[in-house]
Length: 199
View 1 (cartoon, rainbow, N blue to C red):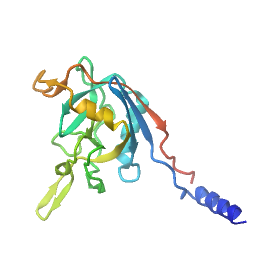
View 2: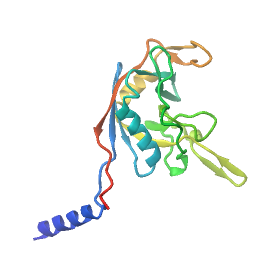
View 3: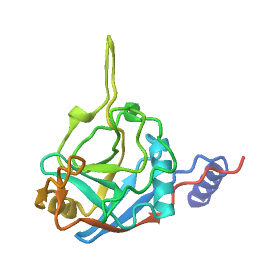
View 4: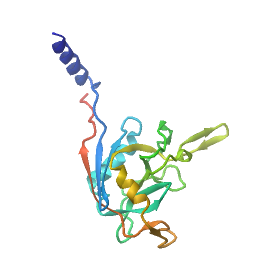
């Protein structure tokens, strides 16, 4: 009886859109190993929607981690192995650094320029706690941070392998370029994002 009642309650909640659904997960296959990330759709909906759209479009396939700094982060998603820019067609998104998520070790965040609302396809993975990258509000203004939108749930050992790879200064634009290249061979959704219930 209790089991039947519980099932009825669950179905009722699902029908009204209140059932709990998992966050999307993405498998990032690199030539150094696999990294799986879980995205926080509740706290960073714009960033997650943007990242998932790029994953589905194949944006990250064949791109590299072009900026690798031990004791800081590894950044990628915007350049091919020929160091040619790739992506950004969706345009910049609103910075979600006010969502309360902190740039802690293993978290995934949007890369951007000095313009706080300029993030497109590039992202980075924090390899240490980088709380200095978090959003800060002060009495006389606001310091925009870098929006965290997910975390590594598998393959942190691969991230740690990448972070200590030798780098060189190829050009002013590529000052921390790993050699050999760290290639993202393919990024795929391993768990679809939750869909909104029909109204």
